[in-house]
Length: 226
Image 1 (cartoon, rainbow, N blue to C red):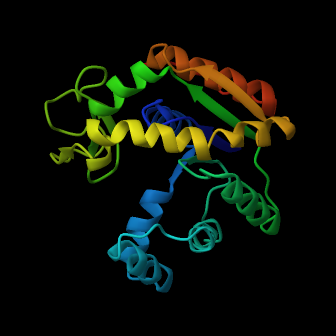
Image 2: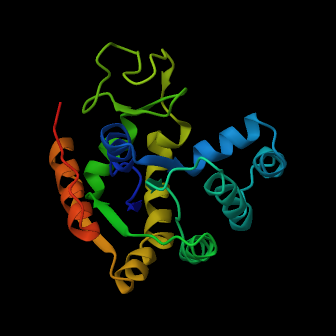
């Protein structure tokens, strides 16, 4: 299954991605993780990406696509994956579709996690991330079972990203509206777009997502909450 999550910062995409990965073995693919690993491993593409990042520039779309292609082309790469955080623009969506076509793959379903602006701001400013495995937490809504210890990997390095601080949140939401919302129409035309209410509790959202996946792909993922 090939899944894409859409939604503004703070919508809960990362939380839902992690749940699907842990419950069903659907690999969460984050371009942030791809960049970090490529840079850490000092690959040719990683070094190129680092040169842009060191200058405070965005990594160009064509380089990101090459990085994603490198991951997708690995011999042991799973065929059950979920894109989290990419594509973010219409140009990226078209380039990603072209890549999938080149690899004889296609996107099965694009799910938007929709949340109103006030709740998004509260969610983003309280969000925390495990620096080691990128598992998401929140100071109000999703605390780790043991204070400051990641539930997934046991790391004690849970932190607030700079772009989750209040002074940059409004700008991030503005950029999302301008650049990413056009993707909704793009995937609607492909008849693979669905929307879930991201203001519900985590288990309810997961249940809605699983129902959509089962119906669209004609499969039967069995969801058992812990």
